[in-house]
Structures are given as structure tokens and as C-alpha cells.
Length: 64
Image 1 (tube, helix red, strand yellow):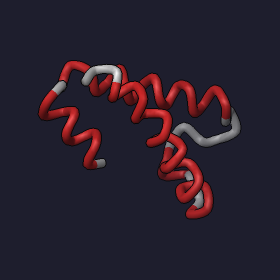
Image 2 (spheres, helix red, strand yellow; image 1 turned 120 degrees about the vertical axis):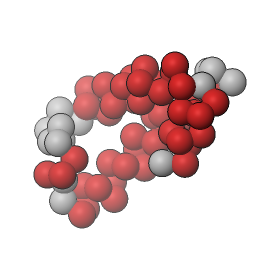
Image 3 (cartoon, one colour; image 1 turned 180 degrees about the vertical axis):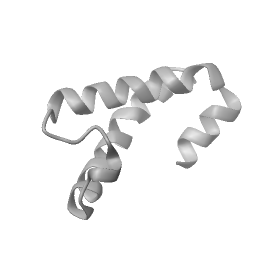
């Protein structure tokens, strides 16, 4: 959350696109994952959240 908050303060025009690309990448590789995160189990949350973050970081870094 801190990375997204930082980007929303410093580069607000990029947040939606960068997070969106990370989520699109994630769901392309995990089509079985519920699109509503409130439906994720604790095990799924522990797996999915770090993976989404790893996908987000390179997109965020592209915007300095």
C-alpha cells in the first residue's frame, strides 16, 4: 500500500495504469482467481498480494 500511496502523491496520473497492468498480468496467469479480493481465502491472499506487488513494482519504476 505504501508504494501505491507514494505514487499517488508523486505521480498520480500513473497509478491506475500501473496497478491495472499489474492486475491484468496477474489475472492472465491466474484466471481461476476471483476478481473480487473479498472472496480470496487467507491462503490465496498470502499468495496473491505479494505476487501482484512484484508485478506492480516494475511498472511503477518505469515512471521514475
